[in-house]
Amino acid sequence: MEDAVEILRRLTAKPLAHPDLESLRDCCRQVADWVLQDFASLPERRVGNRASRGEMEKLLREPPPEQGRDLDKVLAEFQDKVAPFTFRPNHPRFFAFIPGAPNFLSVLGEWLCAGTNYFAGVWLEAAGPSQVEIIVLDWFKEFLGYPKEARGILTSGGSEANLTALVVARERLSFADRDRAILYLTQHRHWSVDRAAKVIGLRSEQVRALPADDQHRLNPLTVHKAVAEDAAASRLPWVVVANAGATNTGTVDSLWDLADVCQKRQLWLHVDAAYGWPAVLTEEGNALLRGIDRADSITLDPHKWFGQTFESGCVLIRPGHELTAAFALRPDYMQDVVPGDGEVNFADEGLALTRRFRALKIWLSVKVLGIGWFRDLIRHSCNLIELAQELLVRSGRFEILCPRQLSVVCFRYLPSKKKSEPEIDRINQAIFEEIMAGGRAFLSTTRLNGKLALRLCSVNWRTTAGDVEEVVRLLIEAGGQI
Image (cartoon, rainbow, N blue to C red; front, side):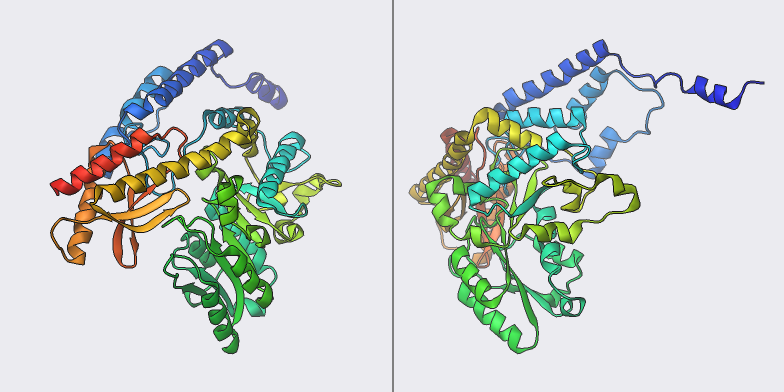
């Protein structure tokens, strides 16, 4: 009778069947050809297409196959049934939300990251990737004027970064004080802050949304008054969240004055700069973001205005040791990975233990393109939206509801005949729907002072004056037809 060890040895003598190297080269060529063709032809194609859940079910629903198929057949199915039913944030006429338009070096960095599958959680296993992440974080700190002792971590995006910052800030509170702590923010905040507050256990009444001023900014005097009221009522003023590039309008709050209020009242100042932070690379943007270096924590999203692929977020913490103190744990199964002097376990700095090598694409694209390319990206984007605003004004058909802030402008179409506010809202909503259905461009809407606003935002290095002129023409045509 065959020995059990011999049976197991025979059963596991070879690795599982897998495509050989030549087959994989062919697969790589197919994928690379598809991606490059998509990249080259994107500006001439529709921005995107919608589909219902029922339509997608008919196209894609199937049980998992027991036996696999050739890549070319699956890739063709992807091209026919998946790829068409998206809206492409990297399309040069995608002006909605805060899009993402990666440079192609970042795409190659992402490919290297996935292909190597490095674990970037602990120094022992990833000295090289960890050092690259340290360098990238140091670059960001230098751009923002942050001190060397500050620490940070690359995250999946701004939502995780905001949550991480609030967790660190919460660690300063005793358990007794957490129940009465108050978080102050603007009505124009990113709602990931509300979600983060919910995750860490704050009740809705502990999140105090303050009205913005007539420039859509958080007024330091309003904050000061609210803090005084809460302190007098035996509540505990705790954190102020400011915007450096609000999603709604692109506005930057008065960071220096808010830092003064927080310093006087001993409050934690968190700046959500997910969108606007790269503006510090330009003279105009650096002046606008004056005071960001005084924040206790900052959220950055390189996958927004720094030309990176999704997912690429970041959080920086001024008192860097508090980031590690908030997250570091050392269970028995991790006893072998205690970092040495100067070494960093990024698994000790945030939510995730298993971490991708997110820094690679940032490091690669900055090294190849140079920081001047990214500085030009900021100027290019602002100039495009300045052009859009000028064209809208000169047409005589639009009201600017919030002038250009960074690379965002908010406006609405005004009909030639006098209409009620609800009727004007319906017309602008119809313009939005018409342009989205047409597929040539994509923008988004918001509400400012109760009015429905159309909104353009550009962060795309491929967008040109011609793209801006086309979307303004489409707006004028849609307004006239409706």
